[in-house]
Image 1: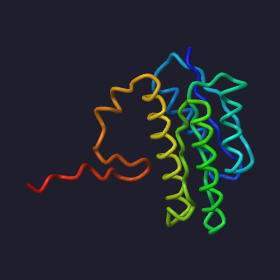
Image 2 (image 1 turned 45 degrees about the horizontal axis):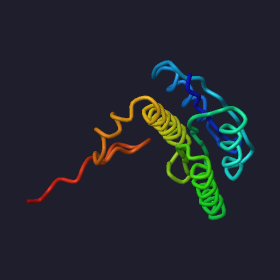
Image 3 (image 1 turned 90 degrees about the vertical axis):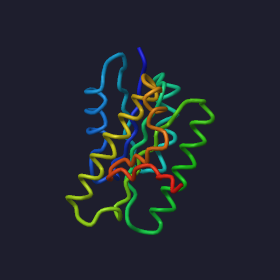
Image 4 (image 1 turned 90 degrees about the horizontal axis):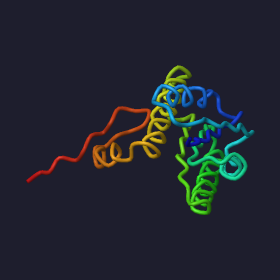
Length: 157
């Protein structure tokens, strides 16, 4: 049985993990979901490392929602670097799913964006573990998590 770790924060204004877990549970079987919730986005790398070391996760999904301030963007960048380092150190994938508050024009749009992005990243995490060939078929198609897909670049010749 495979294990998927889900790390999220109390700082986020939407319970993104709830949507990610629901999407994972609807995607298939053969895995167990493990969840760790931490206060802020910079705590996510340690939460993922604990999911790997203490809980035996095969892959982690890191969910975070930085605020609108410049400082929040810096914190998100630092967290992202920490997640990359953790993934390399563990030789296991971490699917980073951040939603910046400034990406949406209203609270309703923010909730919708956070839900869609969490669900779509969760499905990508599932595919990484169980259906990597599906990801290979989607290469170069301009998929966007949370927003409308951009589509592939069309050759001009």
